[in-house]
Amino acid sequence: MTNVYIGLGSNKGSRKKNIMRALSLLSKNRQRVLKVTSFFETQPYGCEKQGPFLNAAAKIGTALPPEKLLVLLKSIEKEVGRTRSFRWGPREIDLDILFYGRRLYKSRKLSIPHADMHNRRFVLLPLKEIAPGFVHPALKKSVSKILENLDK
Image 1 (cartoon, helix red, strand yellow):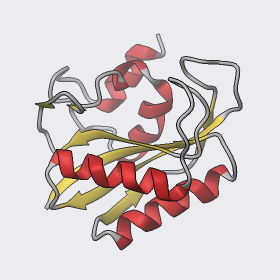
Image 2 (cartoon, one colour):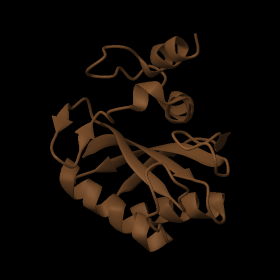
Image 3 (cartoon, rainbow, N blue to C red):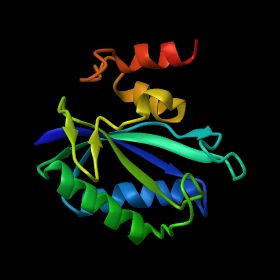
């Protein structure tokens, strides 16, 4: 089992219900949901002309390798009702792998740690609640320190 941190976000439909459904589907697909953060309402990133997001983070235990976990997350997004619009557009649910243990991983489809998480307060704020001391394996800084630097 590997501990993985997942970012969750929704700004379309019943935001909290969408996130809770995604967490439930993770469990139903044999992923151990170990911790879930509070919900944080945040402003949209990339495209500001849309409603606010509800964001959270979760720590899960998985036996799936990174690419298979990504496939599962995409299938959960679809089951929750995500429809593709445009980059950074509104969405029913967004699930991102933030950290996969302390592993560095890069493929055509996936970068772990999440490539832009260190610039995204809406990712770091919930993550800090459950993993403040977790050290980003590439940046060699804790989640708390990355957030502190971003807030300067």
